[in-house]
Image (cartoon, rainbow, N blue to C red; front, side, top):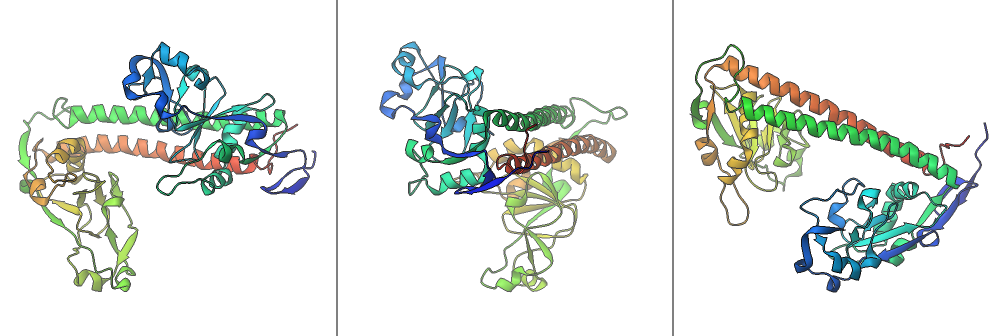
Length: 413
């Protein structure tokens, strides 16, 4: 086995045969057209799509969709110098200035907007390697640190062009890109499977939580019940922030940011018994359902696994005459309509009064409630397991990038 010899460079230690190059030394970097060249009234329903920064999702560009603006043949001719070809890289110029996506044959001939920089590698450069190299943590941090703008970060051809990357020989670029693409494909396939499972779960909820499909052995008619008839509601409180010691206790204290339609095992912050006694915070028992009543998380849910407290933005729902997890799924399925009942000048707010008046069609038999909840819980558990598996491979990918893009691990014969 050949021993790798390293050299020190301005971007760290790299193998002796690797180079440190600025992007503009082996690529052309071009800014998208100025806004004066294209206006919303120029868009058509069927034409040539225009890629902008909003379309960079996990380094993948979309197919044509209703959210992608398109222009007609005359505008395409007028802006022909702003077309993309396979293996170009599009880079966000404003906002999230450290993200990029690789152009595939599916986006060949598309235009790129003024919010985008196009990077076109010269020959003897693997575009996939460049794509991954630009996603390396240290490279992204460097680009962000050199961005300009007080209200929104922005970069230009000079800033991106002067970015330095480590560049191995072409055959090694191919090997590194191939290895990272393989794990990306695995992550992508898991993502598609997760979305498929979520869609199946949504369809199952629509059938089982409305009574359209009944489980075998259950025939009793469903009835409408108000939350106030089957549960009691309350809200929590926030101990004084002027007494820091209040937040060094062992009592779990949840806020709405922690409600993610999930079981709640532990909170970010914990309060003391003294804080509980000297505030409007209350202790809620295990299996209490929490619902966010306002803000960005409105309608989000959580189920306490242990006795805990919450802030005042959480509505705590303690079930008396219904299976807790069944009500959780009812609230989850009906979230959109619940939020629509909210009122407020700036953004919707739901109150305990609104929650108490919510009415749903439910099976009177607790065994049927539990049977439905069990089916949906199994689906959730399967989705959670797949998400954990995807997160594991994403972490592996980050480790691979750190090792392969620095030459610490070599993929050469």
